[in-house]
Image (cartoon, rainbow, N blue to C red; front, side):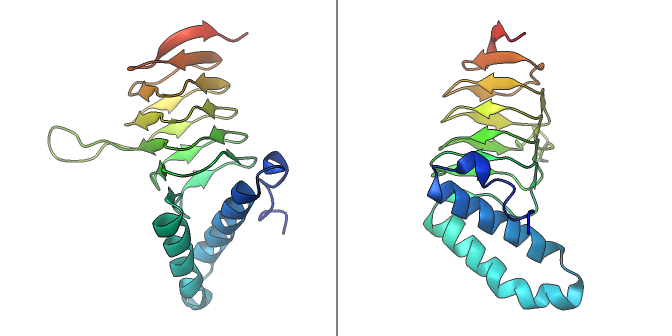
Amino acid sequence: MSYLFQDWKVNKSNIKGRLVLLHFRLAQLCRRAPKPFFYLFIPYLVFYRMVFEWILGIELPWNTQIGSGLKLYHGQGLVVNDHSIIGANCTLRHNTTIGHKELANGEYSASPIIGANVDIGSNSVIIGAIEIGNNVKIGAGSVVVKSLDANGIYAGNPAKLIKKII
């Protein structure tokens, strides 16, 4: 039961964030169920996609690896690729895209790996086979196409180190 509510505390004043993440964690459990039980959960997984992706505009696929303590602000326009990995205690804001990019040969790159305690500003784009270190703050409107070292504040297009956090 604690698995379902692992994001509850950090979203204490955010009812929408709590509900989205509760359903996200429940969908993750349903997807991991053994085959005979998985088929029973298909209606819920369809419900999850219809309500959260189609109606609320929050693409947070149930097979995305996300650590505990995810803080979700607003959520509208949030797109996270299902192959992305997000560490514990991260913050995602509205109109943020995290995903792969199309390469020159027509194939797709891997998706980003984001460390723990990363705060991502609204309208940010993080794409490609890159890694974001722990304890990073990414400013609003930033475009991240290269890996970022830990313990820094980054902003801009393309994102550049603004200040090192000690």
